[in-house]
Length: 166
Image (cartoon, rainbow, N blue to C red; front, side, top):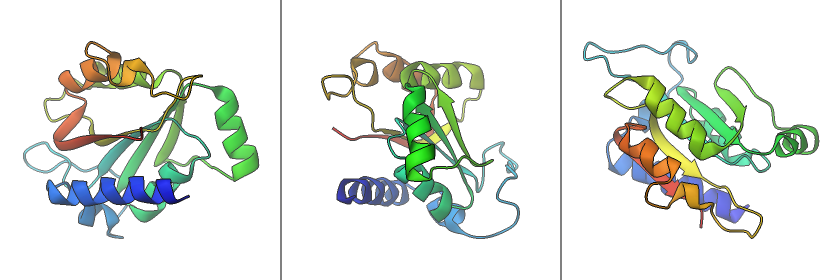
């Protein structure tokens, strides 16, 4: 879909512009499932992206395939969305692409609080989730919402970003 292509293109271009290790994540070097830290304790090659909302799974699947040195977590509220993506769209999980069923903003907050790392958890967070009325849930953008609290608690790495599909 064109909006998926636009969302991913803007995400990757912005990550490159702010100095995130996109080229290293796209390289086919070594063991892509191994996460190595450099001397400063930062991840030198493994990117991490959180997708809030699965849909058909096209965006997280593309990121996993295009960036062999990237781990993609997906938080999807509805188990039936994961089931439909798997059964009807051919979505598959892998060691580098994992789906967590539950509230995405709460998952992000939990990851930020559990990390205990000053360097952050994710290079990027993609919000592609909607409520019953077709709006991005308030927890994703409202001051004091779980996603805002997660970002304030260290969810993002130094050169990280949040992209929201409004």
